[in-house]
Length: 552
Image 1 (tube, one colour):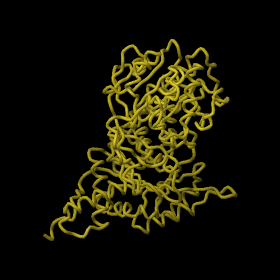
Image 2: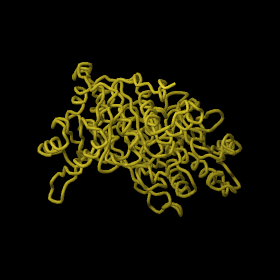
Image 3: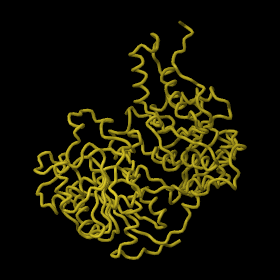
Image 4: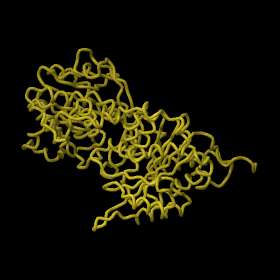
């Protein structure tokens, strides 16, 4: 049957597409550039979605060490994905699914499974068209129903892992009308020692891109400062784009100000003009300004929150860091984060926490650093320091309480100490016997029933909440009655699983832990209730100093 199509790919799905690639080096800020573009288009009244392409062979990010790839971000459907999808959710204020993250592992697994099932009618299965068609299919299916889909291609142009994706993009350009697709290329514009902005890295990166058959429509220069006008002209000349298509994305103190910077450069208007959307956009006077108002508001003071974790890098806890910032935006204070390595507290508190206003103990896996997390929890509980424990932090709060209040010597989590005499934290029944590591935890959004009249009820202003999970262990039901009899309340429950713990606000200014990860649903315009409560507790605590004045 020679006329049968080689794949079931449908090129008709989707409306407008913006592809974002990067050159020179990784970690330039492609994701923030793409998310900022999407934020501005959303402000203008368009329905925007996004796709993150990760060329690695992993099916998802779930088994990756945070040291290598930063935080594993969890979506509502349980997808374990790259941290850039967290930025998209925060900037666009949307909930994404696993389909919004395309990996080489997903693509090749799908194509191979179809080949094994005989779906390709005996044809030789190849990169072109089978792999490239599957890539394009995934993009188009996510884009269906949206005005604009922004697709970020991870890695750097020239990486061997990314070649099939760039070829898919080249084909995509041939399938679309000229005003339905844009290629944005983000490159580094460094300073030389004599203070000159150098364009050669950008020129070589664009040359590499063009050798693949892709011509960028927009160039965004990542630099310490705005690009000089003559530098823009030089880039335009050597890279064959109009001067007005070259934009600056300089360093800023807060990533939430990037949309304002690129808007001042005119990026959003240029994008709308090139995509033929300008006439459909809301008039400038009617566009949403909440974002600009929020991120430029004056603050009344600052507080210092200790983040006690086992990974010594910010990317491993980026959602928590951002959720603290969101709480600060809601309460008009600047939240400064002090990073404290939990291993430094393993032998006990030695002054590291003396100057902090609150303590957050985040999630994690493995035994390393857990004794330090327990020590930080004990310090916060005994010294009336506002405390928030997240996932493993929730579990370690139970362990600390069992050891030091219930006097259960040796109490621990069975994950960390299988031979503990008091496994107050034990494996979920459905996790027993599970051998595969990837995608097998309790993942994604689950409902929690909240007890009326509790601190959790006050925070959520509801008797239910729906938050995202990522864990294999839970509070051991055999110990719940004894723990509650000693004064700790489990105020949130999901199918008999303990989800929220708290201490009586009359005995502690703020002590709460959640088995779920509320940081994954926090947004600049919609801060997470447990984080807002933490910041408010610092501001309201009679034992806290008055907020320090912030210089403007």
